[in-house]
Image (cartoon, rainbow over all chains, first blue to last red):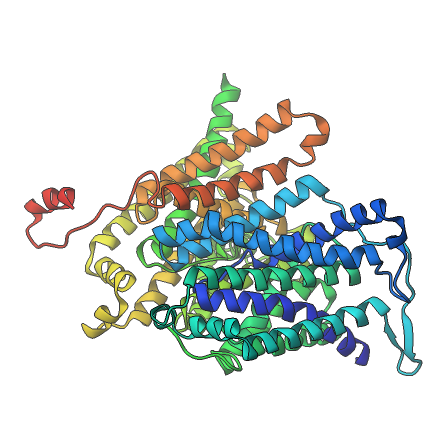
Length: 304
Length: 324
């Protein structure tokens, strides 16, 4: 039970990072982006490629950091992967979404995002194969936190959680203390009014995708580090991430953080009662529950 | 020769069954602007329910009601409609991307329940033990398939005529009015939420009929038949054919299903063995490109929605429609 709670917090951090980017894009571009979770896959695989590259070029870097299975090479690869994923997110927007936005309504964008997700996911399978992979073949044993009740935690999980929290804090400071952060919030509130006040909407959209892509990449690597890397990361995480944004209220960054942790914990606790085969259905049950009790989420506002 | 004809009958049957589902989606998306991300759940609900209601007694799961076939098919459609009603009541009054997310969630949940709940529908083994109507008289061969194709075409034609009349009726105008300008419709004393729910449930019932026919055709349904890709295929059919146009929906169904089977055949015939492992992957990329490409370059589809001008003078209707 407490173990599930602990695992839930760790999964929750990953979902939060995914949900922050999704909720921002949903709020500013006004569409449910079903391809957002594929950014996690792009991030996980980009890190895999550069991890291998760095380790081959600089053998010194393939040393693991402390008790983690994370190597210096992978740590550097994470930074590169965040940049690559951010660029991919901007490119996808420029090539596909911008054009669809101009031609059709918001729901055409939702259709297009499903198409984009299908293409990205299967291209990844084509390039990297359908098999699952790991960043490190070394087995890192879980640390026993307490014997009774038995609590196990892997050092990598602790790293992922702490790093996620630091990233969220940095994002909070960025949104609340910088001019760019202010501009971003203004666009989210009212795009037209923000433009009248001289904010460059196109640039803000690029900023949203940069943040969303970067956070998603880190979430993807964390997922790969604590579970495994496979082409279906996006397919498996899309619904939990959506559940997190709905729990938090669409458009609320802080709601997304809280929603991510709540969905992670709830999903892990639910598996105490439900057989694990039902785990894909749990986020849906959470969504239905939220829609019944508080349709606009914890921090969301009603909007048609 | 008989082999080719027999294959053609088989192909036409499956494509026509899918075309019925596309017609259902067209009512939801094309005419009413409702996004259904879980077509496969309503299709599957119809299929499963038809086999369970009309099937023989099964040892380890629900079944054995032995209802007459048409009643079982109607029951399947009703179950699909019920599922849509529950989802619709919860989500239709909220912002519209909630419906997209919730319906997508329904499909994921439906597949996972069908895969795991053995007491309900046999789990991964699926539902068997269904006696297809008239099988004793006609056997399993060619003549049976011809008869079944005729039945599917009959049902498809009935659905088509029903929808064509529906969209020309005052209710159809109301659907388009709500799609185009909800506030204006509300100001005229209409209830957009209620109308949307009706259209959503009606579309799901049609998908349920399609699923019921599909399950009948194979006399078997399993979780492998309700994978998310089917939803994307049905969307691609509607988008290619032209959302809002029932003829387009049918054309799209035949084109996409033709492309899907042809690409599968070509890959299994000509591709090297290690590429064949990725047949599904390549086909999924194709479907993804078709959806994205159509939305980028021809969002109205091959047969665009014909603008209906709602003047009372029926004689001018044709000309005016052309002018617009």
